[in-house]
Image (cartoon, rainbow, N blue to C red; front, side, top):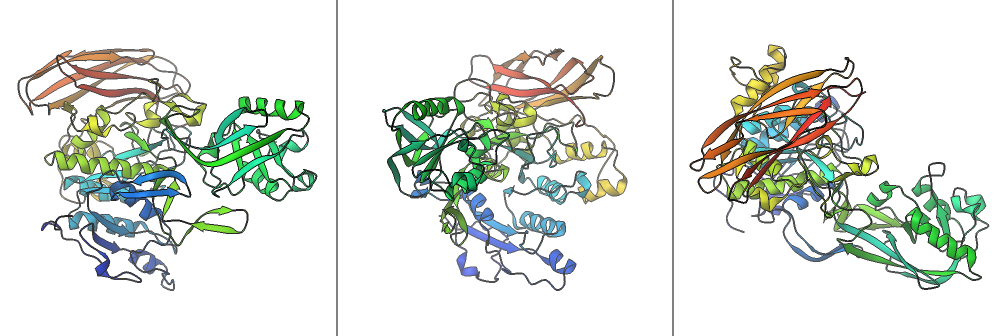
Length: 603
């Protein structure tokens, strides 16, 4: 890599098992912050008093954002290939603020402030706090200062889904990232004795094949919910059936592993199994529909047999389309401020392969063989967040003049709302219903399209000051967020944001109301362009956009438009959504923004 930029003010802080020589042209900063923890607990001894990662989470998310290319890596044979971060040529600076001995908000605030002072371009924050109010949230407070310096802040949405309004990190001046699946399937191939093959899910890690073993089905034992009952199971492959009355999948594996059975076929429709890397026993998970075929064969054959092969990775062809919103991803509207769409956007966050701490156990075979690895598969919005951070770094490199709001706008207005079957993205947490913007924001990020969005919705630091001033906070609370002198002469919640959220009170009688928004779009295309509006109205709504055509004569020209929505409210919790799209005439740009009509508070 090239020399470290002269503008960089960071350093590599010496600490336990970490000296400054470990930094280089890639890792250009490393600092740690625990003064808050030590002040609150004077007798505590920090077990690893340095930036050194003792868990693996920090290493993993840094690798996703900016890891260099490494060939021939895998997770014990799964996901084999070349690992590479989203922005492999970006530099990394690491700020450790969480500790095994505890964590304090003051340390997080100090770490983020230091990153801003050091001169980072993008902040990736894969953590969240349970505080709701913006003036009590250290990430919201520190992110405001970062935004003022032109630094984009990307924050994980949290893993409290799939219920309504479980998202706490509703920071208007940060990008809040939801988690989605990818089109990769870790498979085991079950071959029945009469030649029928079924591809199911497995993450059994041993390089092994179960060949031509007796296949056993007994309706009484098939619950696999008792080690005592399974003691009667013969040696071979046992069929286990799971439903809501039966134990968790992990319990079934434990009971079966204590039996005489050598392997198992698990029949389940529990999608949470497909996020787990804990698969210590040789087996494969198949759907109830596929299970009928297996049970019929086992029940009607004199000597049924089966084989299972493991460590299969399938790309693009799986039982469910991708991406889909992961069930655990926190849902909007954000409780801290529901008037702006959160999450903003979705990125891959389910079973993501990235670098890890090789001294930490990541999986087991059986009950007593612990395995570690240089690379690990992890899931959560923590993994989605650095994808967006990496994309933001790429956009900043190509468009250094863009503000954080412009970068966010480019990602949101070009995001995909269709999966790989060209149908609307689904929600794993609600039986694969169509996902709403409260689940996935504007959609799945599309880095290539975001490089050339056509139009952007920009916002200045003063726009965010105006928003904070309109939130009915006390002077002290407002000062806590802004942390500098400010001008509250023009308070406004009408932030120039690439989405439209209409809130209603479900405790009121059903009626019809009207709300008006105003937005300004900037032409960032190559030159003159004309755009016409296309509206997909939410159910029960009527939308008027004025003007319906925007004519730009040159690059960086701005135009203002208004959107008025007449909408129906409900005396129940109903979410309706649609979109507004500016379509370029005689061009390739489409600039899409979601519209959501939603209850303001969770039931």
